[in-house]
Structures are given as C-alpha cells and as structure tokens.
Amino acid sequence: MKHALEKLAEAAGAQLLGNGKVEIGGIASLESATANDLVFVEAPDDLEAALESPAAAVVAGEFARSVKSPKPLLIASQPRLAFARAGKVVCPPRRREPGIASTAFVHDSAKIGKLVSVEPGCYIGEGTVIGDRTRIGVGGFIAPRVTLGSDCSIKARVTIYSDTTIGDRVVVQAGAVLGSDGFGYVRDQTTGVYEKFPQVGRLEIGDDVEIGANVTVSRGALDATVIGAGTKLDSQVHVGHNVHIGKNVVIAAQTGISGSVVIEDNAVIAGQVGIADHVRIQEGVILGAQCGVPSHKVIRGKGVIFWGTPARPIREYLKQLAVLARLAKKER
Image 1 (cartoon, rainbow, N blue to C red):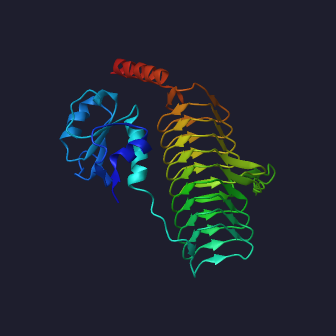
Image 2: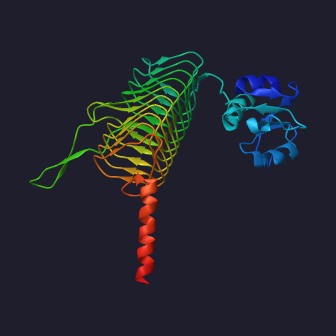
Image 3: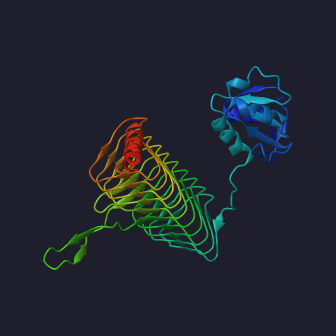
C-alpha cells in the first residue's frame, strides 16, 4: 500500500519541501533504495548520495533546507526519529485474524477481550485476563492469574508465569520467560546445604515495554520485580528478582542484572554489562559495553559514560589505560 508523502510528513512531525503527492511504498537504506522508497540521512556528508539515489524522497536534518533538491525532502531536527515514525505508517505490523485456534486451551474462567488472537498450541490459565486486540503467538504458555493489557504482541513460545501483570502495547519476542522463580538460596552454615528462599512475589511490566528474544525476568522473592513504561530490553538479557527498572531505560543484549538492583529512568546499559546485587544506577547514567558494577555500589552522573570493571567514568578509565601503557613501555 502506498502513502502520499504529505501524510508521512504529518505522521513524522517533519516539514515537507517539494511535491507532497509523491507516493511512498517502502523504506530502505541508501544502498538498497528503489524509486518506491523513502530514505534518511543524519549528516550533511551523506546528503549528496541520498539525492543521487533512486529513492523517491529523503528525510534529512536542517542542513538540507537550503539545498536545491531534485527530490522532495522531509526536514526534521531528528531525521532518524522522523524516519522511524514514517516507517510505522509505511510498514505497519502485520495483524493476525482475531480468534482462538482449535488447538489452543483457554480456561473457562479466563477473560478474553475483543479481537484477541490466540494461536495454535497456546495455553491460557485460570483467571487470566487478556486485553483487547492482543495476540498470543504459537505455543505461548500463559499461567493462571496473569493480566495482559490491550494491543500487546506476545510472540511464539513465550512463557509467562502466574502473578505477572503486563501493561498495554507491550511486545515480547519469541522464547522469553517472564516471572519465573528468582535465584535465591540460604546456606545452612552447619551442613553447607543451600535451602531455597521463597520466591512468591510478582512481576509488573508497564506500558510500551519491549522485551527481546530469550530474555528472562524473575519474579520478586516476596514483593515485586518492576519494569517501567517505555523500557526496551534487547535479546538474552537477564533480570533478577526484586529488580526495579525505571521508565525509558534501554538495555542491550547479554546484560545480566542481579537481584535487588535499582536502575532509574532514562539509563542506557550497553551489551554484556554485569551488575551485581543491590546496586543503584541513577537517572541518565550510561554504562558502556562489558562494564562490571560490584555489589552495593551507586553509579551517579546523568549523561556520564562509565566503562571498565569496576565501572568508572570513561575519562578516568582512559587515563588509567594511558598510565598502564606508559608503564608497559618502561618495562621493555
């Protein structure tokens, strides 16, 4: 389906320069664009290539406003963001036909909203509530006493344990496990045997959260594990019990978060970061790839990038590396 460029400009919050009647049927990179596509550039150095590409139109920053262009332009202060918003219109998510598959099991006490899709092989447990227009993918397991909001997309073979509450417009990619028991044990000092500490809490996930493939999130031990609205977890992230993650936090792949950690709003955690128990990551902190944060530490500094193990501000980290390099030269 094609869309008039003027409609995409409105959806993207961008200013249109040129023919708004041009129709767009796809989005693409500069390398793969066709005469049907919309592309974007974030830097002036890439503008010439975009204008010479086969693309039908270009999303660009303010630097393109005064350029004489053979193509229509969408001018935005954040070109990538504008392109993403236009892309949602051009390439909307595919919707499955609503209905419950004949091979799915839905408990009689479950409350299923309007236009819900439950695909083959699913299990929907006792007392579970599923909001309007939500989709449960093939082989999904939704245990008793789960609450799922509206317009959620739960992909294939996701497991959601009891006493989990999920908000609206949440996306959970294939293979994720939400609300399982946390890793909590008490060691008998006499015998050396480990006894399991009760894992009877709950999991609360806010609106507009996205959870990647094969993510694991543990329920609280006695209280709740919480993931705030707008937070995005990449594939293969682990979140331990009693963790509280704030709003609009981004966590990249293979990060491991131990129990009772607090991550405040707008933090950014890169890939393969390890966070020990009872750590607090304050608002807006940025942890670089493979950082390590020891137990009970507080990491503070809005907008500050931390690196290394133990994690420290990147300037300090680089200075230490320089000192080590000089010492190594002396040893030669």
